[in-house]
Length: 240
Image 1 (cartoon, rainbow, N blue to C red):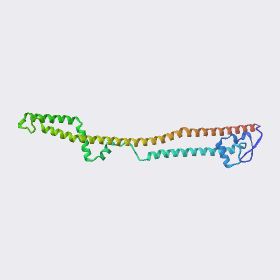
Image 2 (tube, helix red, strand yellow; image 1 turned 30 degrees about the horizontal axis):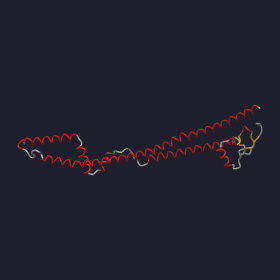
Image 3 (tube, helix red, strand yellow; image 1 turned 90 degrees about the horizontal axis):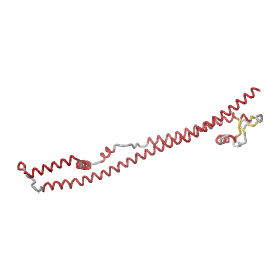
C-alpha cells in the first residue's frame, strides 16, 4: 500500500501515501486556500507534504494577521473611549457656586444661618435682653413697653422675610440635586462605554484568541506528524 504512487496536485510529481495526504483530510480553511490557486482541486486529489507546508504557513500567517487586526480594532475602540470628552467626578460645590448670582448666595447664607444653633441662641439672647430692658426700664430706657408691640412687629418682619428666602434656598437645593444627577448620569454613561469596550476585548481574548491558539496548535501538530512520517520513511529507505 505504501509503495503505491499518487500524483501531486501541485508539482504533478509522484509520491507515496506517506509523503502526503488527500485533500479530504485537510481542514476546510486550508482546502479553500488551495482551491483559490487550483479551482479544479477535488477532495480526492493528493497533495505532498512539501506543497502542503506552504499553504499551512500561509494559513497560519493569515490567522495571525486577522488576530492582530481584530486586536487593533478593539484597542482603537478602547482608546477612542478614553479620548472622549472627560466626564469625571467633578467638584460639584465649586461648579454650582459659579452659577449662583449674588442674591441667590445671600439667600442661601441666610437660610443656612437661620437653621443653625448660632441663630437660635442669638435670637433667644436678643429676645431676653429686649424683654429685660423694656420690662424693668433699665437706666430709664423703655422704647417698647409691655406688651412689646414693636417686638411683635420685628418678629413678624423677620418671619416674613426669612420664609421666602428659605423657600428660594430649598428650590435651589432641588436644582442642585438635578444638576448632580445629570453629572452622575454622564459619568455612568462614560463608564458603561469603557466597561463595554473592555468586556469586548476580554471576550475576544477568551474566545477568538483561544480558538486561534488551538487551531495553530493543531497545524503545528499536523506538521510535526508529517515530518515524523517522512523521517521514518527516510530511515526505512536508508536501512534498505
